[in-house]
Image 1 (cartoon, helix red, strand yellow):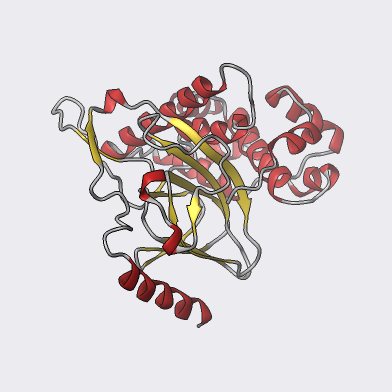
Image 2 (image 1 turned 60 degrees about the vertical axis):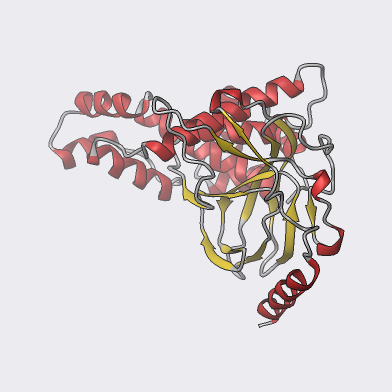
Length: 327
């Protein structure tokens, strides 16, 4: 396979050119307390892969978090292959070689954030187009953000670095903060850096807590409903049918659902559909009318009203604002 040959050539090149100058920051690890994190976002964006698209091996200059929004593919990290699927979060330390190949039928869509976790350990600035180096011999460790190691504190155990691949629950509320970093990245007013930092660190705290205590819905009945919602977005949600199947009243079903999610079933289902609508607006060229039809809304007017009501902008305004090009 052409891709395997390419990666083998890259690894051979690494062995012959490393000579101590390509250290992937191994000699620059800063110990710090988790509470002393001061993140500075240098890159963020959505990247929809083409079918079978290959991103050749590269070295990142910043801590890289890549969330698989949809689709499938292969992520190769330091020579190890990982099957990428929706809701996977990949983490790459600075200077770790990695590459991608998208599925031929369901190419993956990345949501990526690049960050200096200690604010000023790299000269890389926000929006820098060279956050990944594909030419090994050109990689400059002096431009890389520092790797970190958290000081062990019994009261606040932190697993770091995390596993390179973590499956994230679709309903994890802290993931929205991660996606909001991308959403607001292009803002340029005086408060943007602090706002992005706040959003990212909200995500980071949630992520670290999840690593320590993975979230599992407590009620299997609610898990079953949520799983159905994720795969039946064009169908009508019928609470009476679900209540009967569980041999409980509708009122008690609503009580259980609110306790588990904080929302009514209808609100939760609508949020799923609107999240999928946002994905379609960002990552496809379907018209607003076609998206409304695809997601089972009764009309494009009803879809647009619901979208504007919940997200405070029209579908077309959202599409124009969030489309980015960073992989």
